[in-house]
Length: 295
Length: 296
Image (tube, rainbow over all chains, first blue to last red):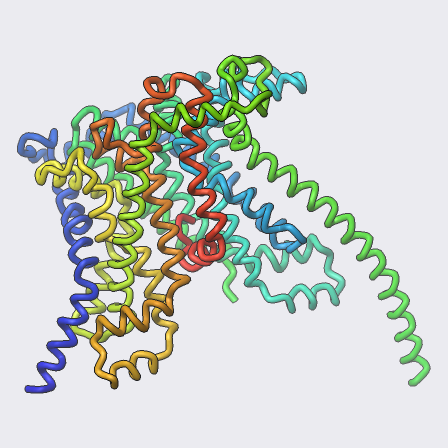
């Protein structure tokens, strides 16, 4: 009797501590996820009762909606531009920071500042930097004899321009994570390699890169998830334009849900996004055996 | 035996000596190159923000001059006074929402983290897997039902959707703080329990002060996320006067910020508090990132 009540008290205590978070997750995430599953199978404007249409939304998206295909293609282009550039530059910065030269913290802070800066503010700033006539970028280019394009109003250059901003803003976090990875590599390995007469380049290739592969693997997965959902930069700088050249997945989803009132359709899009992320993550997971090095 | 040994020793000494100077010269060059590269990169990273601040202090005529200049000829501090009048309500909205988010989320997440890390009760592990399960799903999936929910309970065009759901779903914060709580020694609690302290007292008076670095990290992340949020205010807020600073900057570019210099002043005011916060809390911030891999 006493033991039972003690256990009961422990349970009540425990649930009081975790209760608010668990109730919140149930109410604001778990149940909405179930609702979203159902909504994706309906035609729903969000006002009137949803009308069940089975896999109609998914069929329309995959088979009929050419605009959806276009946004998907744009998103893939964005991702393929964003991820390699971000990871290579972040690695370069991390290697530099890892030299631990005096004053390094100032440089590290400078590299990281765009990452904490507000996406609207920086997009507004870059919007002006990209101005064809009196923008800073083209004026700098003209000084070295290059006539810059009308970045954001050119169907060719808008996407690279947007990618450039997202890389500029995005390298901070991967840099910090790679730096932590670099600092985790035992010094003895480099010392042993040096005694064996290995060159700097060989040390980098044979020690640094292999031991960094778990970190790189992690970054590939997380970078894919975040860059496939790019929104802020696009929303402020191009609104998907010109001529839909930068219309990306989340932007089209946002338009469907909150401009066109197609809640069911947008929900179906959200689940396709989830499926894409799940499949790509799974494939990366399977492929990691081939290149990720675990001690 | 002895002679051959000493010979090789001498030879290696010579080799060592030569390669050491080579290495020293090489490392001096490497360091020089490294500083040049690092400075060049720092300029690339800082330049847009320098231009932003410079432009915010220009006269409008100077903004439009071709070729553009980086720094104003005479700083127009008045620009800030002008823009401040416009953005005061937005700043207030952003500021108090960020504070509400930080305080609320720290409370809810630290309680949950303490429960998960230090208490034993039925259903704990199941609850923890529930906490982690939704983390795999991109938030865009539940955003639409959330929107409908808020409309049904009259939360659209109020500030509730911008803090209540966030404070109550602190997945990453709970996860991070749980790691911190787990590392604390058991006898801390045991001694207090013998003294008859309640679970809440132990959590509040004894355990919470031990995880201050974790609280700092979660607090900074939460502030950033709230202050920098675009999607939430964009969707849930309709009235101008309820809007947050960044979203006002995005939505009312043409209305309130008719001059580029004022727009840049607005952008500067949006960015600077966060940069100051980041610089002053870098230590916790970076530790938080490396512990969770947050945002990748």
